[in-house]
Length: 74
Image (cartoon, rainbow, N blue to C red):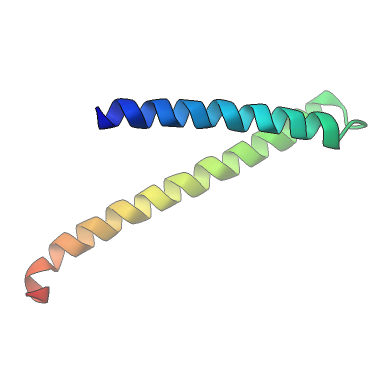
């Protein structure tokens, strides 16, 4: 059930973020051509994905290190 909830949350947030980006670029950059708008959005989404994956990797590494030194803490 947690996985389904997480997936639904991620899909909902993804749709909401895409909708917000669409309106932001539509209203903020009226004079920019469409390919430039798409490029800026792609860079922003890529940065978000990279930061998210970095955070998840750091969290996983932290858990593994915590399990390694569990006996030392006792």
